Image 1 (cartoon, one colour):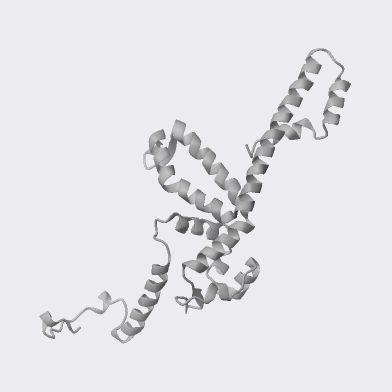
Image 2 (tube, rainbow, N blue to C red):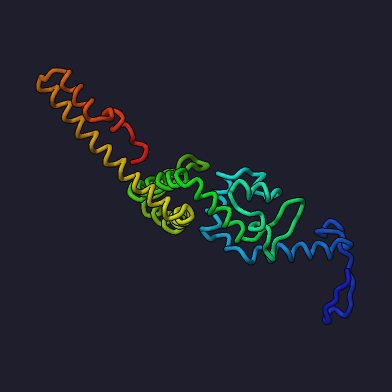
Length: 239
């Protein structure tokens, strides 16, 4: 190895091959590859950006791993209703090992498209995580550790959720699309109202039976309600 800096005056040292990332004959190719990856990385968000976590969650949960690698951009684009050029025609994009390495704009486009197409499932998951976070902010939570379950205080649980998880959920909701979010929220409120009506109806039916009214009257009330009371009261998974 020749040291070219002026202060070393052309000094040469021997470097064991095991310490080299590639052979010297491959150094130029290696540096070019590192440069391409550096350009792609510079376009995207930081590793701690909630968009990075949201994109990973969507791609891992709702996109086939083979398609996510963009080895067949035409197939991926077709399944998402996009044009292949939207995934590949970026100045920083390049091909490596048969896969298209695309910069952040292409990744975000895929993540947003997949989120909109799977909005209800994603929003249900977000809702469940929000419900869990509210509970942990009041009661704390337990996490498995090497010496058993460790209790996390409500204060720490709330802080971690506010700084880490909540921003990711906000990105997921945004990527699902405003119309899908509005429709989902309306459906949630509708289900709450259905359950309330079911509880009221069941209370009335129970009162009729408790006061000695014929069972046929209670049955008639259930029939005229239109939807079986049991079904009205059973939908607890979306509260």
